[in-house]
Amino acid sequence: MMRITGRAKKIALFVTLGAILVGLAVALNVTWVVLNWREVVPLVLGIIFFGLIIAGIIVYTVFLVREIHKNEQQDSFLNAVTHELKTPIASIRLYLETLESRQINETQRHEFYRIMLEDTDRLIGTVEQVLKAGEARHGSHKKNWQEVDFFGVVVETVELTRVRHHLPPEQLRFGVSPQEKLLTKGNPQELRTAVFNLIENAVKYSGDKKDIVVDVLTPDIDTVLLQVRDQGIGIPPSELKRIFKRFYRVSNSATGRVKGTGLGLFIVRSIARRHGGEAFAESAGAGHGSTFTLRLPRVYHV
Image (cartoon, rainbow, N blue to C red; front, side, top):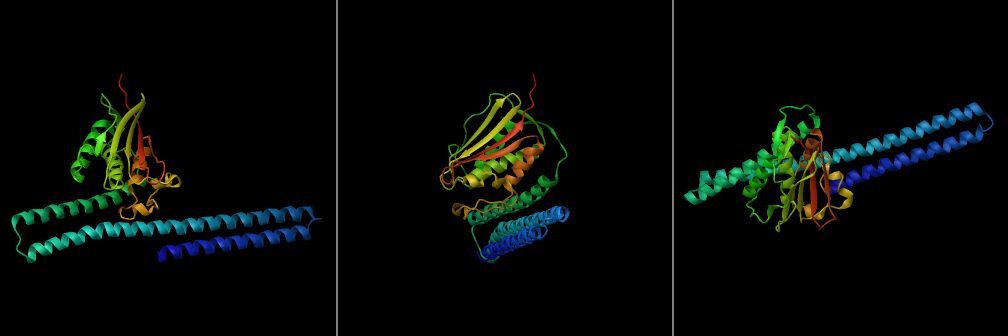
């Protein structure tokens, strides 16, 4: 909290300083006009010159505040990644030390192995998110593109998520599903990543009482939609456009216990746009659940 307060003070300081400089520039401009109101050329040149000064001060202040805010987001990201890496490593170390120092029965041994494997999966997932965020930011080439059975990808991801989080079918289920194969063109691995991130996000922010519905729709012959609806913590309207930014996480007290890097939705939108589509979110507000939509162009064969 002290770090955030310090950032806020810096932003307020630079905004105040910018406002003072603009005020001084305006005062000088007015003085110049008063002193030279009979001289047309100096008057016009003075107004233009001081206008440029004011514009420069405003642009500089805005740029500086944005940089401070960006640094704050990067610090939050580093803290989140550090936590996501440190926690499973500490857990694995603890169980290894226990296995080395104590005699335990075979049942406990297998349970320890299972937990360590889950922690390893968590480590790999965090590293992959960071790597994929870099690829999503810089990648624009159509590498390994092919026709993909999009609905098949969604079905596989839903089944994998049920197994991974031990969810019964009624907590993660299909609502609307197509009666035919839906094809889209792109990188199969990237599309799986986008679908996985959306469904994983719904599970993560649904709390203990999960009720997640997955719809795969074709609103027209050229489009395929994936909609993931949850009854979780919801999103304030002012945050709906920001949540797809890199490192951004919703400033909701209900999300305090939910850990993450702030990269998942950024990756989803980057992949969607690289494939000629889009990703967006809808929510009635905090406590009212959310709907995330991934829109992609459809390959239709007559």
